[in-house]
Length: 233
Image 1 (tube, rainbow, N blue to C red):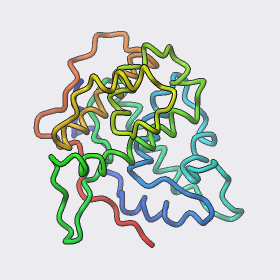
Image 2: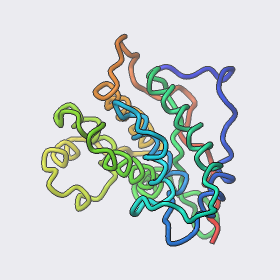
Image 3: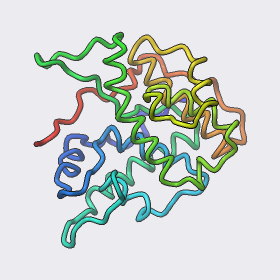
């Protein structure tokens, strides 16, 4: 897995601004937050055939039912930023390159980051991304999830290991595969799992003709963009 060149990389998205836009989506819609959005868009980028923006965008604005926003609500700024991120993910997946998932370590009441070696901290950081990924995978069952189950097993297990077993009912083979995975001992390692296993899924849903480089995070990369965007009440 090759690291993209910083010289050609697009400027980072303003995640706080994107979160503000998502927070402005009116009730009763339940928009994704930025970490869930990133996992969701990763699942969209892994689809064998990309769904039209209108199809995947509705779940960005309402993760519960995919409802349309009220008349007059301007969703274009969210769509434009989400499309930009989707293009970044698509390029990384096509090139089998590392990318930094939008995963954030939770902070305690003193605004100190949680212990990155604590399992609860790891789960708190990783779960939103994985929940968004699951939404993107399940919303288009004829795409990624329409691939042969046995081919998807290793990739899905590496990502869904962070979900509660109760969320994986009637998935005995997947649960068995998850039990065979050694849980990550550090948040950075958990983030590496997300990227590495997403690329395993890409080998199934979007085959790479040339032999890919070994999957590992580039030296010095944390896999996290820093502080989480602030949610507005």
